[in-house]
Image (cartoon, rainbow, N blue to C red):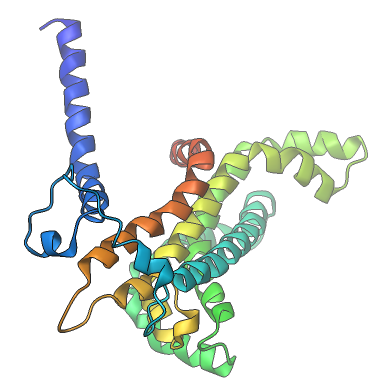
Length: 279
């Protein structure tokens, strides 16, 4: 077998695996442009004969019931962006502290950052609901921001610490000799070098918040504050599922994430690869 043949076979395998993973997304995108009857009958084509926009128009023009999809989308942005910013801020401070300062039990604490993900999330439902009730944050987006941040920070801290560990402390010490304060040395030297990790943490926190359903369904009761996952659930009932609008809403849900992810995708991939290598 020649070297060229091996390359062709490898590329074919990569394309086959890629298509296997992309097929569900392609199907959803294609089905969203086909009629509800076609979807229910199971006659969806990957390349529609006739493109139908009827599934998308009601998402932003419907004025009946509780189905205001644009409001759900706006709520997800209002919750997701602050969650990503807060999680990145906390994770950056925590990771830098674990990397640079010696404290009792530091390594044990660092190792247990991921251990909390072993426990089922459902175990936290009652404590979280009780805490949010005490703080009067039930049915408020601020409470959801705090919970989503708490879900993202442990992994973000664990990942980001490796980037700070990779930055030589000698660079900070040299900056201090030149008159830089600790804060200025961090902002001008350490932070830029750890930028791929910070961008990765930001995207991870945003995606975590954007798709979170369990705590949102428990803490948010008002239709005016519901996020996209809760909004999509409104299109399913015991008697009928509005498949067309549900699939169209799913496609629209991807767009804000793509607009943020595509410019930062290089940092995201580099961040995970470098984080895995350094650890």
